[in-house]
Image (cartoon, rainbow, N blue to C red):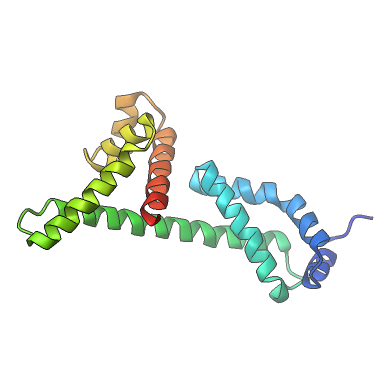
Length: 178
C-alpha cells in the first residue's frame, strides 16, 4: 500500500529518511518545474530545489500532517524565488555602485586605488565568462541596451538573453564572493 502524504509527514517528523526520499520522489519534479518557470535558469532552479527540500527536512517538526504537503512545498518555492531575486537585485546594485564609483575621477587617491583594484577584479571576472554570456552582459550592463534590443541585435530570443544575463550575474556573484 502506498502511504498518503499525511502518513509520510508523520514518518518524516519521526526522522524517517525513507519518508523524506518518498516525498522527494513524489514532489521534486514539480518543485523544479515551478522554480524553473519563475527563474528561467536551470542551475538556479536546481539550487532552489535543494533549498526547498533542505527546508522541509529542517522544518519537519513544524509540519502539519492534515495540511497539503504540495501547497507547503510550493510556498517554500515561492519564498526561495523571492529570495533569489532579492539577492540578485542587491548584487546588481552593488555592481552598479562599483561601476559608478569607478566613473568618479574626483575620488580621493585611496578610494581611486581601491576602485581601480575592484574594477580590475570585476574586469577579470567578466573576462572569464563565456563569449556569448560576456557579450550579452556587456551589452546589457555597460551599453545599457534592453533585453529586446539585445535579442534583436544578436538574433536571439528574449528568454535566451534573460537566461544569459542571469547566468552572468550568478557567475559574477559566486566569483565575487570567493
